[in-house]
Image 1 (cartoon, rainbow, N blue to C red):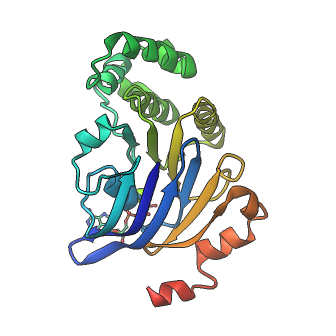
Image 2: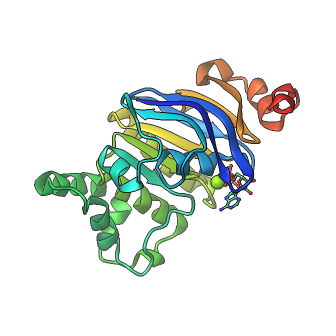
Length: 242
Ligand SMILES: Nc1ncnc2c1ncn2[C@@H]1O[C@H](COP(=O)(O)OP(=O)(O)OP(=O)(O)O)[C@@H](O)[C@H]1O
Ligand SMILES: [Mg+2]
């Protein structure tokens, strides 16, 4: 579904992504983990068209999409829940959700999807006419994910869904990701921590200093050793070569 080859992107002279290869297959839930500044957000911004790559290719469902604007990619089924959620705090929960489905022409189906999203996230139903800025951090995360669902994506990308949330709330958010994936949504999720992801992930990439330090199926990384080594760069000969 998503196929990234030798991707390079950055800010001015800083190369935040050096040569990244990454794939996501239909139905998978793929995690990209890595420390601060590894390039995780840059990767998602580049895939979603907010940044233009300086080299390499991104293809989505067989079509090269590098360099296309975010609105067009959104219509093609790519949705991004950005770092920090970016909900509209002064609008109501309802208004935030309607913004998610605004670009759709299939209004009847969009209404059905809204009902379903409110079922998946009951707290949003309970606070439907309330101000979004009054929701807790975890509730705002759920709102951001629900809004992205209403774009009816085929691939949903989420930047650090657990950021700033209490452990119990992370469990709830992860449970909703599990549910969405079980219903057929393909997910690419970025996290800083490797904790909790092994149960949920199909495959995992460790990103360090703008390159992939490790990639593998979650079941092959289950003991955590290889993950930890790649994450902390104990055997970092790849970085020296980059
Ligand atoms: N707008 C920007 N202008 C200049 N440099 C940037 C900008 N955004 C990020 N960078 C730099 O690019 C590199 C990668 O940043 P990025 O935000 O992708 O990291 P990250 O893995 O998402 O980190 P975090 O876990 O802290 O969110 C870092 O060195 C960062 O300082
Ligand atoms: Mg980030």
